[in-house]
Amino acid sequence: MEIKSLAIPDVLVIKPKVIQDERGYFVETFNQRLLADAIGRTDLVQDNQSLSRRPFTIRGLHFQIAPFAQAKLVRVLSGAILDVAVDIRRASPHFGQHVKTVLTGVGFEQLWVPPGFAHGFCALEADSVVLYKVSNFFDPASERGVRWDDPELGIEWGVDAREVTLSASDSQYPLFRELPDLF
Image (tube, rainbow, N blue to C red; front, side):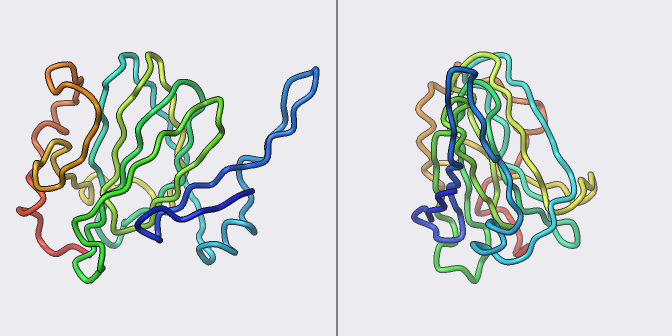
């Protein structure tokens, strides 16, 4: 596996080795030992999967607060997404900054998002399926978010806001400056 940092060094892109032949392919999509070498020991306790039927469906920007804060290991099973992580750790030199990358079902890339980041993605293709492993269980009382289109964050999603499909809850999240100190 090839593991590289993005502009915020705690967020990693993981590219597994793909072995292909006339039968198809084989890929090791998760290896706890290799991940631990890069980030330290982390137990991943739950898998979540989503289907975004329409292109320009945006999910996020989501996070959970302590004691249920989550790290995420995100991969695309089919389709493609623009994946975004926003640093919401006030003590971080990258506070308020974001990184983004495209993940595809054919590229096998994965994104490691540690606790203390708001995370979201935009489906770039119809019927995009995303699978992500998380380091803590879902807790509805700990769930929080920030507006995907907050101008202060300056995230270029590459879509016209009039074409975006959002959940009711994602459209109600506060602006970044309204977030209390949670991390």
